[in-house]
Image (cartoon, rainbow, N blue to C red; front, side, top):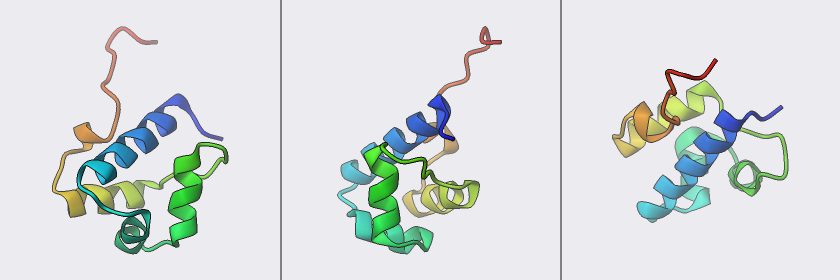
Length: 78
């Protein structure tokens, strides 16, 4: 099951991918999956999502921070 956080992570990864002009196919090679998996994740119509290891590989490849991928933490949230 996808959570709101999963959707935000997917949205942020997609935006970063497009900003850096990286194709879905290239992202799939970076994280060791098929192009179809990345396309499925980005459609937001399935329950597919990136694993913690996928996110690690994405952050490592792009040289960014987890803060660029994960949504900000709301200290007032329950």
